[in-house]
Length: 165
Ligand SMILES: [Zn+2]
Image (cartoon, rainbow, N blue to C red; front, side):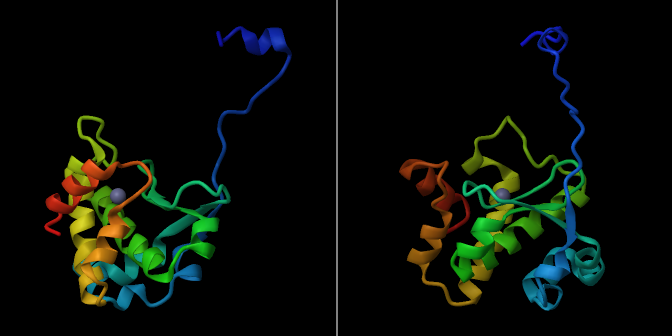
């Protein structure tokens, strides 16, 4: 729609909407003590997680992501409630890796790369796969974990190969 439609239709849309944020540690406890998380943030793990904020959305679609505006987590409350424990756990590890990348000034969503070839995603998935192996998840289940809705079989093979699975 052209900008003048707002006038013509006699409606107003306030386009600045602040998300409601909650402390990460209200929902996720003990993560600062995990080796996987200390490996991501080093000695800063406790401080980073203490300051980290989470935004929840209630759509049934979607899982978790990291804001490329301020680095807070964005989580589907449906996924949080219904997702398999190991999946939600690994998603948190994956997203914490993106939080660190954001803190380092990296561009989280780089349109030059396809999802399965994005260095940002490959690094985050490598850390996630390491943790999945550490907690004893069978390789087949880890591959299942990599099979997200927005990639096809061929892309899954590429991703698995890229993360050394
Ligand atoms: Zn990711």
